[in-house]
Image (cartoon, rainbow, N blue to C red; front, top):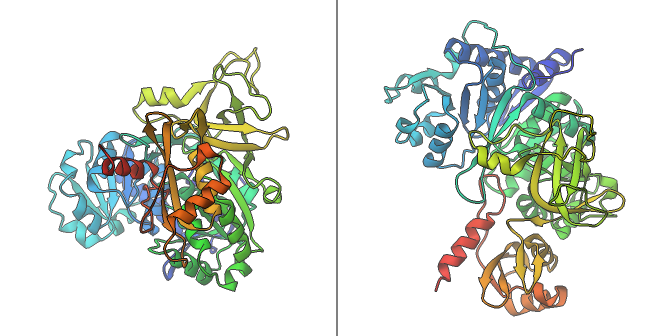
Length: 534
């Protein structure tokens, strides 16, 4: 049977193998692979009937639901490019994305359309809106746009999409961005299919798996739950949770075998009681989006001792980069592992030469998962996507064509056995008393005290230290108020003097997240500066 090479072929291939197997579950309803494939083909035919041209962008502004998945795979099936927009974004942020990548079609719900109505007039290339409720499409007040209901669009006569190949664009994922406007990372069919195959191989996903989609589909790790599951013929449960307990309930009710989440969610989950049914079903839990505190990892392993922990590191610009095999977690729990299958991870000096063992350098990703740059942003693309030196590892002098790789901006070190360790992001490293300190290192020790629930560390300009370290934290669940003197005493006992925070502020939780679910370090530090200005 032909291996899938285009994104939408992941569904088509599983539909041919196991047409009646469940592909998606949302609430009380499920879709088989056969019905999902039919819906994807119908959506693609509907876009073609609207005159969608090859590589035109289709934005999807929906919570996790069947229509969001169908549109995400139906758009590339038509030869277009899908743009998933985080449902947490505000109308002005959505409008920026619609303008920035010249969106032609918007897929949304009546409720979300009402929020966007005041800003859609600014979106110069938008011509068609597909609404999940057919009746609402008939009553839309925005006369300058053409509105189509979901059901009529899918009922369009069958029509083949534009011819595309695996190096063509498939998606644009907008990163939250530490400063300024978000950046649109362009991914090809090849990027996304290679990522699905790679991740599914080391997670050993198969038709027996049920994966919980708890992360936003606009986040590369969130969308990866769909691609890996569809490649393996597994089932995905779509969950829009309000509280961490909702995640645990879904894991019990649906018999989830695979969970991927970010550290803030795992920290919250680790502080709750888990049903024994979770441990009976859960085959693995995977972490991405930052280092998981060691105490959190230990707590999760106690709650689900049968589940294998996968500690992962990824870049939206390269979809996924490294993972630590479960059999290495006890030996090196602080490692981000080695390169995933079909990728090579280099640690390079500023001059492009390879670092030696234990020498800090920049993590550089080469291979099939390297994205296509930032949409319409040559300057930022040049900062992150760079040519490898002709004599870089894996290159030979006889090769005449250049090769681009992703230069992550993250500082790592590689030990003598080839395992990688994250040190910090260049734009987040704190310089205090002549020492370079990673905020994640401070946070790791704070979590180890078991006196805080969530925390974030950041540097503040200081006349003699260079930067002083400040921490904002919440109280650990079920422990009551935190005694600042006791917490500072713990820090002094666990940290070298230069690393001890100059100040700790205890606030009510949870701490604010950015749209991808990570604790928003930039927001918290800027708010702290505003409160303490002067």
